[in-house]
Length: 396
Ligand SMILES: NC(=O)c1ccc[n+]([C@@H]2O[C@H](COP(=O)([O-])OP(=O)(O)OC[C@H]3O[C@@H](n4cnc5c(N)ncnc54)[C@H](O)[C@@H]3O)[C@@H](O)[C@H]2O)c1
View (cartoon, protein in one colour):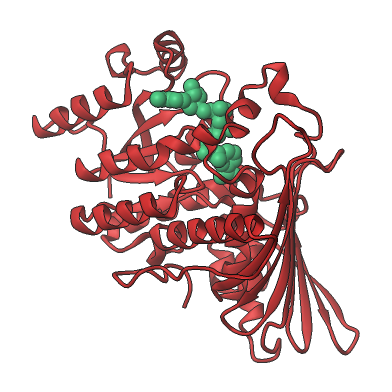
């Protein structure tokens, strides 16, 4: 494909967090070009953001709806710089309405997680995508790391043995104090159920732990019991919780999702044990994957284009070993592979990008956890995605 894909963005105005990461990631491999945005509800912020990014002022839209309408017209008139793909980096409650509008208009969608605020609305989105044929990617960042792919590869080997136990944890400390009361923008909407949805920290970071578990074990989480809580009286959504779960392949595990672990940064860690060996990956040391074998051997698999890694892990390495392959590179791998899926006219999952199947399973997980917690921590089945096309996504 010679021309770069024209990318529009919803959210990501000045002062926002993840929008800038998406822009860097999309640009890294030269497959996308930012052409327009509705970066903020605040029109001045939107214009200021677009100016800094060198965009035409007319294509810094004061509303998302205006952007869709105008870019659709641009495309209909044959402008080859009209938006083709929309990146959604707003608070959660807007993810599905924006993705739906984009899908109806025929744009590809790259949405941040969680996919939405209810399973019902994500099911509606799945139907709309099936009808329109629009591609949909979900930026579960950690599935872009090479050593996560290597972990999945090792866990699938007969020598590893069936997966019996998973311990996954995503702990942060940034909500250990009541930051939302101090005007912290990222905290404000994350503790508001109308904007974040019914899952607080669990939707924010527990959703990553869920997707990582399913991806590395190549198995769907099918039942759970959850205990969730908030540590401040004015905070209605969970900021801390533990989940016990079972996997379709017979394994069991525990998942910790907490934003009140004072001093923690982004401690996403997964340990997976088969009958003959165990694996450990920590996102804060992403180049290393530790494998411990029953015979006492301990191997440290390292990222790098010069290392003996599986094909899928090597495809996600960019540098010789020893140079950290980090967060932006992992995000960029998702964008690069999403562009490849669009160019090849195949599903994002066929190029290793999480999509609507992961969106459905992620929302079903969140809803089961909230229901279980509300019922005193009793076991709940996680609703399997309804029948239809490509509901397994990245799972074999
Ligand atoms: N994949 C990851 O690792 C990761 C990391 C952080 C955040 N996220 C997700 O990204 C999303 C955004 O999080 P954030 O931390 O960047 O939030 P943020 O508050 O920093 O940014 C949100 C942006 O959306 C804009 N916005 C709000 N309403 C809008 C509207 N109607 N139209 C256009 N823009 C609007 C805000 O002005 C702001 O610019 C969330 O869904 C979050 O869960 C994902």
